[in-house]
Image 1 (tube, rainbow, N blue to C red):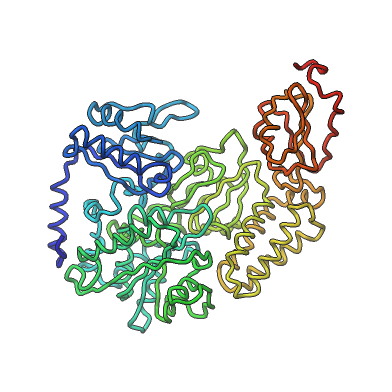
Image 2 (image 1 turned 180 degrees about the vertical axis):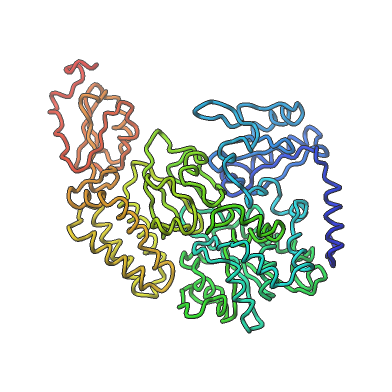
Length: 639
């Protein structure tokens, strides 16, 4: 492809691409995101290609590996266009039937479509599946439609039209005004208005300025940014170029975790293609605007998600935060004005430019506009990525989209905002998702993690888990963060091990307050959130651990015990065979007994027992076992 040197050449190319596209030609889109690849999507793609070639359909049927459409629980996902027929959990052996029945026979393979677990109703189209039906997918909708390695696919859906618009129809000030009018807030956690940040850099006197994509996504269970980089990398590049034009930058960086090899590969290919076509580089589209982008792979430090730590790492030094006496949009990378936004924020920019700020502000709440992508994980039936309008109640996300809690268990809490977020209880399920609403409730939006917990989750142990993570990830530069998190973790560990004492709760609150107030960066300032939110909403669990040495959720190993109810045991030998510690004694036709001094409390016996004979208790003594002479089942009339 020759370099595009003008707006006219771009329009001509798009018309050519559209003219070559047959809207009636079947296109089989197979999710090739990291999750589906792990579930065998590569083999499914190969099977489709081989079967199509075998049947001589190569000229009539198109196949493409695409980005993640979100429904990770049921991958690999296959969508057949133009009908939008959606097949779930497709295996290579299903491919010949799909080709024969759907592509050639125009029939549905019903065993591969979505079946509602409650009503048994079938949903053939992607838009009919409840997981998708209640979403509003602005950023994710194109993931299943385009090959992320193909710039032509992106152009065919209107790609780079927003960049062309700003270069030839808008001044930098008009671009910033449009972003300000849209009230686009940063999707990386703080929720700072993007337009105001851009304006500060635009007005800074220095001539050298930078734009950065923060793709250092380190929250456990979060993969929103990864999915966008893997599935639609040009949308991020286009948004970044628009931001660079707006503030007057000629260099941009994408700071991405090296643990995201597919994202790194796809964004690298996208930069290469965009440069080849003339959307990056010198004199873009003949406009006189120059802009180049480089990829920097982070070393995996969670703290480098913080803006100043990220910029320090980009400069080649250890990734440690620095004081923000002057904001980084005024003095950032190499002491120059720098705009840093996360992946999802940049991806929203082309849509706002194309459709207008008025369109964007119609979605969401007064304070939180647009949509937000969440990684919905944990004790939930439908795990995956969901994109919803700001203001949707948490209940709708968990039950309408997520399908509720598995196994008939009761919902207990949802943690939003990653390790530094808070845990919200059942009585806040109707809280609308928004930046300000979540903060007022004691949590935060964060980058978009949403971890669902059921009745078997100990909230004290949840706080301990996240503090343990943050202890490892703290850079250690400032005392409040380094020592405050460590001391809170020590107290939480003692409580979960049955060593808690009166005064621990008050001490936790005091340390949390000091840490949150005095820490240098957002990691330390938000680190107390898991502790404070669980104390606020689940204080009785802390008190039970400390005063009764009891874990109400039956989760903390040091506070639980297992025993076998002699009235329910059927001597089936299942628990005895599976016990890794050899802590269960018994024989055929003999009631089994757990030897407490050997039991490691792994819970294997509890999981494998089919007769509900294995009991788990906390805060009460273990019933004494039957004498050996009374353990024979025949003597108890149970043979």
